[in-house]
Image 1: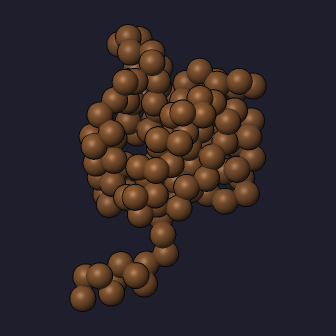
Image 2 (image 1 turned 135 degrees about the vertical axis):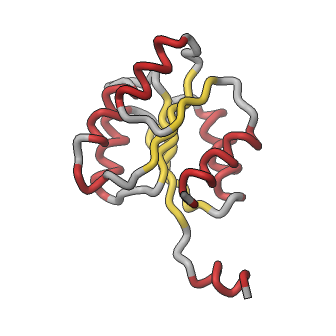
Length: 131
């Protein structure tokens, strides 16, 4: 029965915001395998357009992006009342405590430093959407 219930649920949506193609391929594979419908944006402005077009359940957001950095994108998402339920996981090579604090202050739900455990990342995302 559990399988039947899952089939009736619409797939959860996830937006990967990342400008490094190899990381995009890896994240797309992992998240599709975890049952997400995955879209990709390669810069901050494209991310905001993608979110406006269709609100994802989760955004995997790099910090260092062309056009607009991840902190700015995160704040812009949080300023939209209709995006209150969008979960944001910042993925970044910026691992200092100050960087993490900036990400959390911008509105991120989680802050994951690269390189990261793929298993842990998938579990983090699933925990966020399952509440």
